[in-house]
Image (cartoon, rainbow, N blue to C red):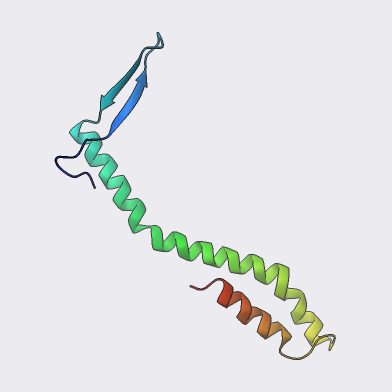
Length: 94
């Protein structure tokens, strides 16, 4: 959030002739940017949870799915699949 007394936000504008100008945000632009930053921060937990879910899904598919079938066929020791899933959950905690 923008604090009073601190230098405000600005943007660089380049016109048709190539002239570069730095302009301060208007009060409305400041308020809109503050709202955007607050919304982004509020959504952080949901983004983090989605990232964990995606990481787990990928790890399950590449590391544990085949173990399930191998365990069912008796090709690996019982509990191998569950142990791998538990390891993935520890690696990617919620």
